[in-house]
Image (cartoon, rainbow, N blue to C red; front, side, top):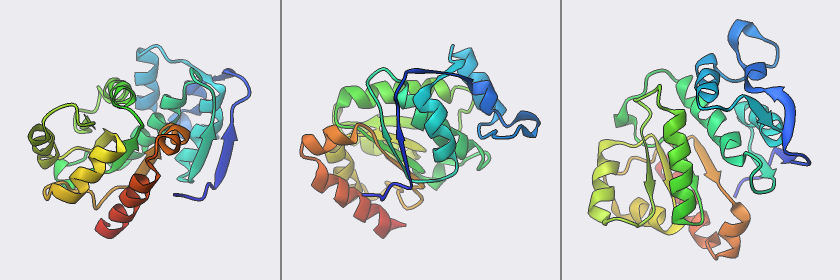
Length: 207
């Protein structure tokens, strides 16, 4: 979907750097994460960065399209959620009327739920950033009601997202700034390529 401006591949799990090393506090050289995000990470027990987080977070924070390849258990989820949340926080206090600003597309309901759970913990200090998982595991009416109220970040499976983009008139997706394809290889292997292209096209049309 997007031509990668940066290719990041992990060769080892943990790095010798901490999230605090990348904090913007005190105009630190190389700082790219707000102090309050680092504080929340440390509160959750995340201090030392994995190698993939150290390599990819600065690239993503620089607003580059980024293709990341890494093994399971390498900290990939935080590698994209940290710069995603940080970017939204830099916009100031958000209003739910702005609609959805970021989307994370995953191949399975379970992965969507796990990602959204991590996201909720990461945004505990910012109640105006609202997230939800849209996976088809509940009635469409309930999902439509949540979208109508305004959801800042959506974690979704491809099919269900296409469904709501096509049929939910109150779904405000014209301001989406960030699109994450989580486990892109599995998305393609499971036959979601057409849906992903369709999502990309619809977002461009709504922008």
